[in-house]
Image (cartoon, rainbow, N blue to C red; front, side, top):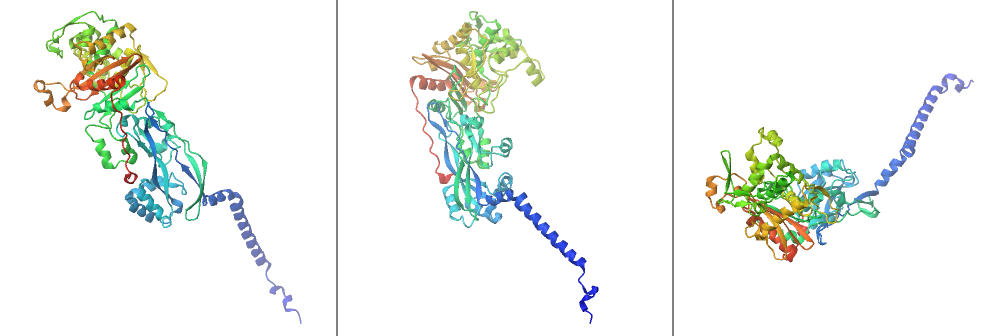
Length: 611
């Protein structure tokens, strides 16, 4: 019998076997290719990712540089602070975690979510995202005690700025705050949660004060719990800064401004170093470091006394009779002033139909330059203003450093206004008038200067004509910005008149006369509004505060080789001698007689109140 399996029709088809073999081969090649892709092509990348699940790199915050006064007293220091970080990679339920954080800290959940959304683009999933910048001890304990239930929450320790003397140096030091989106965009070395200078020297010296972060490597388990750590790179502290400011002098002068608005500048005329720079009213820099609420910020911003304004550099005022010192320089520079030539003052000067009055109704009689300054005779300087005109006055004023910022290392300094014919035409569309020459000559009209500009000019008058850059850093090289176009003899004449203004019985600055100290000064009473007959008849105490004159006194004091320039400007202080004089006297007594009491540092708030 024939073999039943010998028939061709009963054998398995060869095409089916080939197809099966092709499928197996394709699958083998696919798996091999995938294995090569994972193990060879992407092997290093996935190995790093696997490693990151166990090892993480974390920044170590660098301490900000300390700030000290010229005597070595620390005025800005660093204290430990605690922030709450959120490691996204370890968070199981974001919504529930944010709700838990809100319950612990009191921060609104929607605000936390907004912070999270803004920050996640800049922070890696395994790095702590600072969700709450400041925690008190109670909140820290709550986070730590419940860590296993809420993986991904991490306490971040960093240093926080503390200003030991609160308001005393606020306008000098400024303050720090969290880096904004703009800060992060401008500086790639910054990260979310970093502190940066926001005002004052903290802002201007940010690069020197900040330092450089370190790096720490952490080993964690699957829940994010830290197993071990190692410091890979040490943080580098910022540079310590020594101020030119004398803390005791700063406090002594600040006491004179309590309850007032104004500023006092004390300057070394030879180096430009500022021994004191006081602006009142002030604010507490620590409030910004801790973080202001919207309500607190609104109160500060809308305060009618403008405590955030640095009145020494950011406020400009009509200088009043202090400007007569500039007029004397302008007259010499133009070659139109003979200091021996006299002018007769009968109490007023007529120009056309307008009468320009002297502050002394009965007049000063016949006065030369010396007595014109000593007695502050307006008529003498009206006549000098008519000789010079706006062109020569403004030209010398610019050469003397007015009309532009001094270049001090503080933000938002104003340059003030020195009017010219072109300036008035552009500003008001009107031509300059001869009557405006007279107002210009006594520091009224459009003229606006800052107390710091006046201090720099007085310094140049007594240091040989050098316009020094005002400097707040002790030991920095002095910078000469220009020179007065005056001879030494001309400067000496003006200086002598300033001394006589203190020592002469008719001088307006007798208040600062100090035995053993050579002092010279010039007062200024600057009108704020045009006084009506009704206001003139009113007792000074009844004149509304905002309509009262500003009070100036600008001068110098020297004893042996030591000399200083002091300028005080009191808003609505009425008279230069009584309004501003006490500040100069207090500074002289402190510097040369050792009178004055140093400030006591303000006690920091207890950590549990830092919210």
